[in-house]
Length: 298
Ligand SMILES: [Fe+2]
Ligand SMILES: [Fe+2]
Image (cartoon, rainbow, N blue to C red; front, side, top):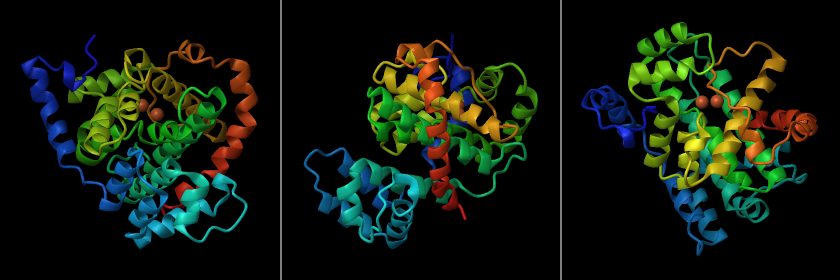
């Protein structure tokens, strides 16, 4: 089966079809220097808290966004934090990286979308929901780093932003046509663009130098059995994706396009229905706290 992965693209016609997307991804805005610097420092075992604090402090808007999140109930610190170095000390590098990235992505891609049927507000609610769910599941299952899970969850569907932003006519047609059977939309994406949104997200994550495990989890989130480097993270995102759609449906209709869901994946990482059931209340509470990210949109 062809997954539309650029690595698999040997067919000349397919390569031709994918080229406009690849060009677009190549020309995506680069992340602000402050975020790039934080991403590098987080992966450097010799980096110090002071270096991270100095990097963040180069951008005062970023400092303000991070302090806003830190002082919300999201991390439950229950005390007022007024400096970035204090926040780093209490929360760690990875949490600060995720806050910086969330603020940047919401800022850059949070505006109204191009495609009427693709609601950006709902898109971000779903992305934050998936990130929060993935973080909670990671904490419970202790299989993967909760902050890597948050990051992968946040970005997992970003490929659709590229479709919406730069190929809105084709994307609108695809959404009209694809409603119905699960997985149909993913196939329609491959047919239209030669590549699906997971793989586009993988390319974006590569371009932005995200950790390799996170990058793979984004690429394979609808087909986690393909994952080689981070199968557990990928399985976790697969499940968190579905759970956040279910959570959304409790609040009202969920018009966002969904991908195929394999109900056997949860078992592979030790996720039972009982555990999911027992996490419901906590999940809803976490989601409410995560509203602070959505407030960054305004
Ligand atoms: Fe997806
Ligand atoms: Fe999703």
